[in-house]
Image (cartoon, rainbow, N blue to C red):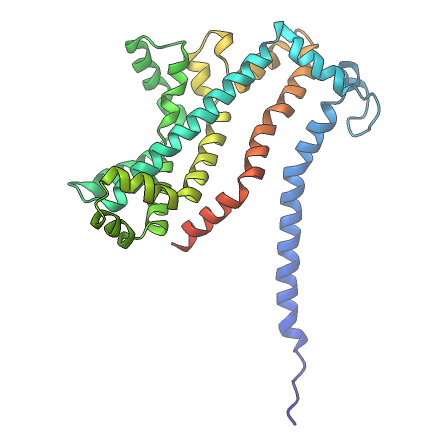
Length: 290
């Protein structure tokens, strides 16, 4: 009868040390991420005086409801307008931008045309260009066309995302077999019908993944609206809170509303990731495998 030899402790020790190191790094990363969020949650429940005179981590001086009322009453309810603007910029812009990006990626993958790879190389090069570098050229173009300080000066530039096009091509390679497209064409479907009724349904997880990337980028967009807009009624919530925070050094009553506004500003992104997580998880997995 054969027996199993006991494991060598000398061989197990490096493995255990490696696992312990990974656990320590993960724990530090989680704390680094969650502690600012915890501070934000607790600070948003404090009154103005409690923010500067009490321990933020304590549960005393609770005034969450009053801070919410003050937030939506400040400056005639501007925060509600900013919040609606951000939802319009981000949700509508991310939806249209995701459709454009996935369609472009699909075209790069499934069609053959002159200089295709060179054009795709330009797309990859555009991924590495910081968005702040493009703010001045975009402003000059918007000024020449007369759309500065309008909704369109912020909305149109966010529709086009080179990284989304790159992801669209990756997802088209992984999700849409060429054989399925050929079968649709044999059945008499045109190119547009084939894309909308066949390919786009297969690209659902990829579309959601690109949408979430776009949503996060547009919601956090700050520099472009600051350059383009001077009308407060058109501000997104990020720019509006920045303006209030600048005024807080002179008017301390802005501090609680800025903190409460910052807490409410992260809720749409959390909600979007929670509701759509099964789609973007599968999408990222398919892209990684491909």
